[in-house]
Image (cartoon, rainbow, N blue to C red; front, top):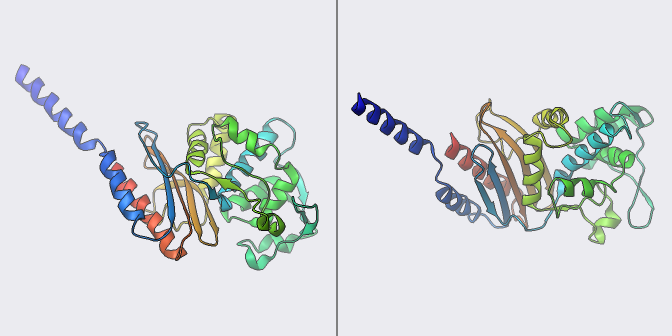
Amino acid sequence: MKNIILLYGLILLLFSCNESVDYPSLQNNIEKIIKSEKGKFAVAFKNLEDGQVILINEMEEFHAASTMKTPVMIEAFKKSFENKISLDDTILVKNEFISIVDGSLFKLSSFDDSDKKTYERIGGHLSLRELIYEMITISSNFATNLVIDYIGHEDINMTMRDLGAKDINVLRGVEDIKAYNKGLNNTTTALDLLKIYENLALGRVINTKLSQKMVDILKDQKYDDIIPKYLPKEIEIAHKDGWVSGTRHDSGIVFINDEKKYVLVLLSKNLEDEIKGADILAKVSLEIYNSLI
């Protein structure tokens, strides 16, 4: 009987060893992948099951591109929770926004936006809830500016600081060319986005219920060419990508199953080939996923 117990214990030990992740080897593999393409890359990964992290250039500053839309969503939900606004408030759809540089007006072009339908609603009304959904799922720049115009950008950074994101900086909406020319851009680090998504994954943004509602919106993301690209189609991923010239990003939560999930942030800049750069990040995503299953 004693021998049987010892044998059973040995089997369990061997099984647990096979299940463990070789994180140093994983990091080495990731570094090899990102070194194969010209550009600057950052990776921030956290396994929410065992708390292990991999951080590469995690404090490097990047143009936030559309990854800033997740903080905007969080701020809108927070103000709604505080009864300062309602997600069901209706907003006049107008293509007229104020530059943070000098207060002059500017417009967005549908040709430079992934969203065409909202432009067809100019002069009408859409709910804040609808605009948030379009801002996240199809990365609508028009919807983003309408949301920021309604809720204000002033409190977004403080809300992010409360979540432990110390360096992310959301200054403005999208396509404020005067601000862009003066270097007044929304910026982030991989570490800050990691902290934001970790809080969402653990139900710590406002409360568990609202965190889950935001995660559900992020799961409806329509652009799947980085983190989800090479993963099995049945894997749920709550994420937000980002793109500006020479830059491709993706950031979010990967749900392997009900018990296993991890946060992954992939940032890049100075890319000579954006398609190849995005594919490099997709290969990093696959490398991490394969190491955990």
